[in-house]
Image 1 (tube, one colour):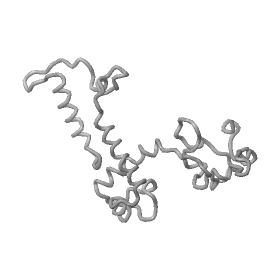
Image 2: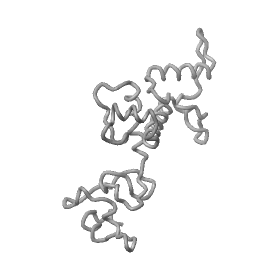
Image 3: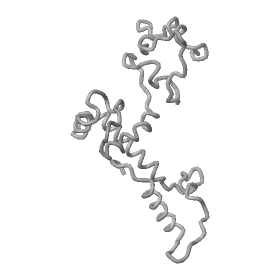
Image 4: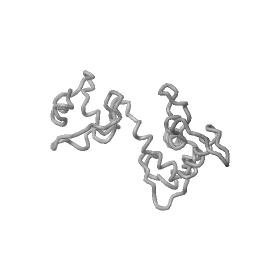
Length: 183
């Protein structure tokens, strides 16, 4: 499950087997299901039994592989996949490519799940494009929501910071952001 995307039909069959075991169904008789399978998969704190939704679990394990490829760039797996699928970029910027292996399609398919939760830690801000990356503080993982018509598309976060006083350059912010986003 950590390397290949499990097909939906197989996951449904496994869920069916688990439900049959849980409810005591035999081949000849069917027992009454007291709760929906989705309710059983809820966490115990939300009134469920904490069963895992295997589809979500499979996606999480595949996203973990993308994370490992991003952080362990000296590994043999990273070297092999880089040579084949993302020669001139990072794994987070890689495209699916033409006729890839099932392993790469599975791992690449979970990249969007990982990207949903990634956020830059600003530091000096030289590597962070203002408009394309999630870098704003808070629990949100969205990018800057909107830009003005006169905004510089190549603007980096370091351009917004006065490094001498370690404060925001208010003039640059006023020229590039809406009034609502300036607060």
